[in-house]
Length: 272
Ligand SMILES: [Fe+2]
Image (cartoon, rainbow, N blue to C red; front, side, top):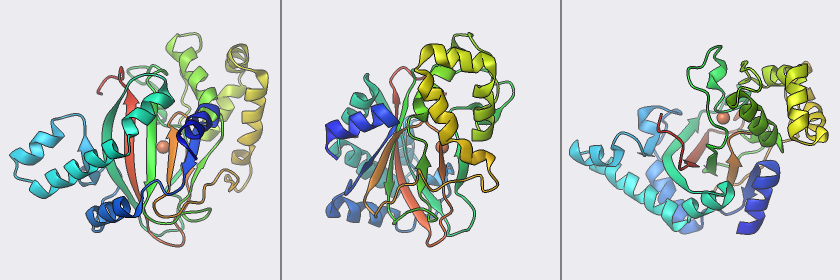
């Protein structure tokens, strides 16, 4: 996929697969840095860079030279790969790099994470601040192990990012009330309620709503999952996606999974 195909794919369905995202030289460098990386998601150790809290400076101040070098190498890699530029083109406006981290999942029969929506207040009943849907988050998932269906693959419901954009817009503008939608099941139930369905159908083509209901029907079945939206990737490939869409991480049944993530946000997104 070339750059314009990536941008087109993300604008249309929310996600794009890029083969050989890292060439051999970059892959070797990253593998060296992450070879002993077994930190679980969101643990302090998993972060290679963070925009908040003077991350970079603190590593120097506290004589964490190894971490400082790792941080430098990773931010340099993001520059070399022109990720800022690409995320800006996808977003249609300026973006900022907010974090680089690793995401390690041990071989298991349990899903890495079930079908869900990011930026959905973890399903809280009363979130304190409602997020602006224009504060887009673009994620680069760079795989350092092979993945596929039943093996740590990311599934993404194509086009679901559009449903979520308008749902969030309605909530942000107080045209519709907030109700939890972090879980796909809750989201599905919510948009079948008249107020929400009518609102969405006035904003986007009716077919989008009915398509989404069809695409997400699997969550109401006994299996509560599908392999239909899974991506098969080789080590060094990447998925780039709009975080707003519905996604899940399949169980890494065959081997441990290691992902390097670069997260870019719209420049106007508040820090916390
Ligand atoms: Fe997520």
